[in-house]
Length: 168
Image 1 (cartoon, rainbow, N blue to C red):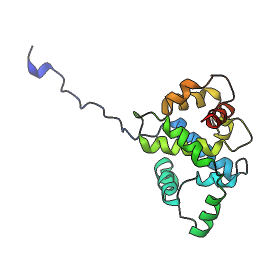
Image 2 (cartoon, rainbow, N blue to C red):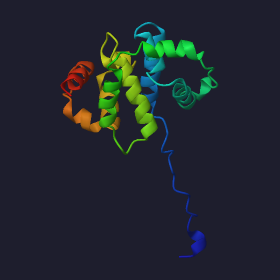
Image 3 (tube, one colour):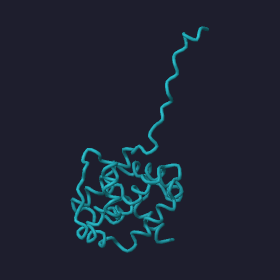
Image 4 (cartoon, rainbow, N blue to C red):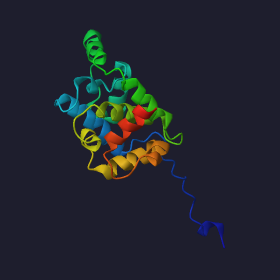
């Protein structure tokens, strides 16, 4: 076989390791929207993170709205102070069960969104503005697999997470 008959090898596709899956983007967007609309406590609009990190999240996940102007620091700090005292512990529970194969930054952002959504009145998938329990299960399995494995499928995820949280 003549080497000229062989198609040139194409470069192997190298997907962006930090690509943002649609479900993750929807979950973060849902928390922000639900906080703005009054469906979640107002602190959820900050996702419980420092403003520079929130602005980085917004720029990365929603480049179509970039640049987002920062809020006056005093106003932002007031929102952060509304964060429930056990928010950090819920965040720690989620991050302790993170999938090391997933991008750390995206996993941390999702953990912040899930922790904030736990303070809503509806089911967790609704407070994350996802399509249903299956979407939430998929996110938990992908980003927090050891926690997902301990949770009972088909139950109210928020209730199960809160039970897990209070058991630690």
